[in-house]
Image (cartoon, rainbow, N blue to C red; front, side, top):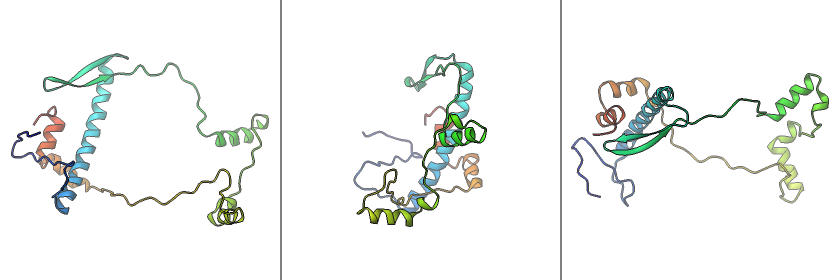
Amino acid sequence: MNETYPDNVRVIDLTGPEDTRSRSEILAELAAGTAIERRAKELNKANKEKLADMLDPGETVNAMIGNKVGAKVTLTRGSAGGGYKVKDEMAYGVWLANHGRENDVYAVPMPTEPAKKKGYIDSLVQENGGELPDGVELYTGSLPTVKVTMDKQVEAEMWERSELPEANVLLTAGGEL
């Protein structure tokens, strides 16, 4: 796909066999991408709130990008009525028992806090030939992840000074460079 882009647009082929970007370029692109992602999230939230007042429930409209239908946007009908949903059965059960509703709760055997500790479970696993007790699962630690902490002032200035002109155009002018 050989397309011609303006001089101020850099297209990065992330599918190619070689990534020749430097560490500093990758870091700068990650920071800029984080700022763009946050701005896009803010814009999407504001636009969805506005469209919720403009569309009828169940209505679907085309979102044009250039002269093509880029997306279909629908205001869902939502759910009828309301109700209650028990999202923490244990907490609800404790509440019932504490409010004189003992007949509405089950007596359930629960492990004590010391019985949930690693050392205690280690001894049980060893006693049972390496087999985990029912209701216990083994988990591994998490892998390292890349965390981005943006300088809020620098992020704000990126938009004010048009530090990211392509991003500004994409996020404020309908997505066309």
